[in-house]
Length: 174
Image 1 (cartoon, rainbow, N blue to C red):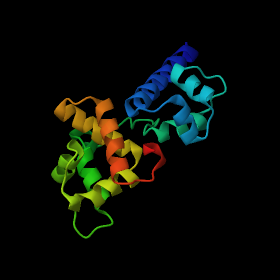
Image 2: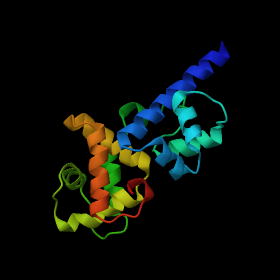
Image 3: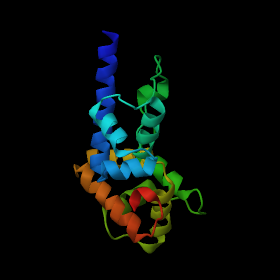
Image 4: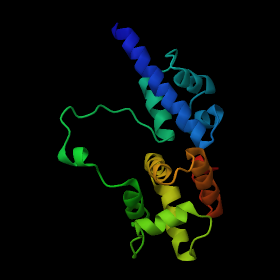
């Protein structure tokens, strides 16, 4: 009974990984290259089979695509119950850390939703795409998806296009 529950949970992790990788427009081979694993190991994780996969491999692979495995607090905090800071707010603050002026979340939203934005926002967009954790970028995409209805795959492609346009060197965008 316990083994079948573990297999079910591992299959759910695999499905989440496959969905995120696909949304990002990455192949199994590219993800394997980015996390230093072989393509068959990526395939094993996505198919929910354990095979040669260990937790260290799974955690490394998941982090490359902005996912993680965590244990929830059995007693949620007030902040968790009331909802935390929106991802776009966190992203705007994160993109501003190296600059004198703080980027407004609405300005970041406008920049991420369009292909044209004021030149003064370019350094902030570049910093966000170059330095923000992939999990934060994924959270921003999820927030924008829910707010606009735009397909996640389109958002990931848009982020990739923007990253190329602002000359990022981050491997995930290349």
